[in-house]
Amino acid sequence: MARNTLSRSLHDVGLAAWFGGTLANAVALNPAAGEAGSARGTGAVANAGWDRWTPVNAAAIGAHLIGSIGQLQANKRRLADPGVRAMSTAKTVLTAAALGVTAYSRLLGKVVDQGGATPSKRATKPSKRARGEIAAAQERLDQLQWVVPALTGALVVVSSYAGEQQRPSEVQRAITATTSTV
Image 1 (tube, rainbow, N blue to C red):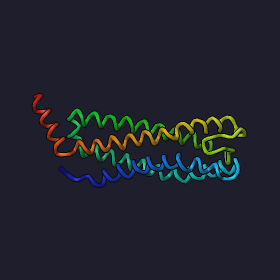
Image 2 (image 1 turned 90 degrees about the vertical axis):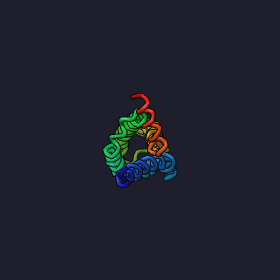
Image 3 (image 1 turned 90 degrees about the horizontal axis):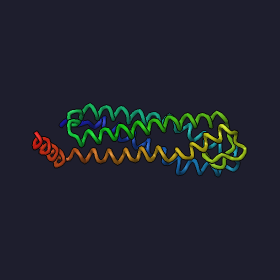
Image 4 (image 1 turned 180 degrees about the vertical axis):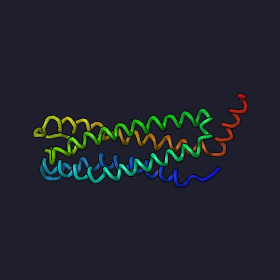
């Protein structure tokens, strides 16, 4: 079995940054922005933080996707095993969902960002002075800020399971199951 250190590293480090960064921003940045001293300051701090995170997040997602493609290529023969195929399908579905929610969240973030230092109680909690479109985007972001870490966290778990499937005992079990059905 050949080593796939580069693709595994890109896959894992990219996923770790995607998961960890979005979780940290939901747990820390968004609530901390509320301590900026004013509703306008809250909006400005949150916008600045998310604008700084966006290119790093894009690079993390890109690294994860490149690593995922490399892993698929390196392990394409293993996809003949139904368990590996099911795990790979689950990872693909979770990745697509996380990408979709991330892209939608970014679009909502742009709406908020274009409003400037939008008055806010905390990054995703609009103040009564926030304009309707911006307030609606903030409310949607308040819900979605937890969806991306949940989806990418699930990807971490499924990826761990995928690693377990490569243990010699698991490979032998799959080979035995395949040969006994033939």
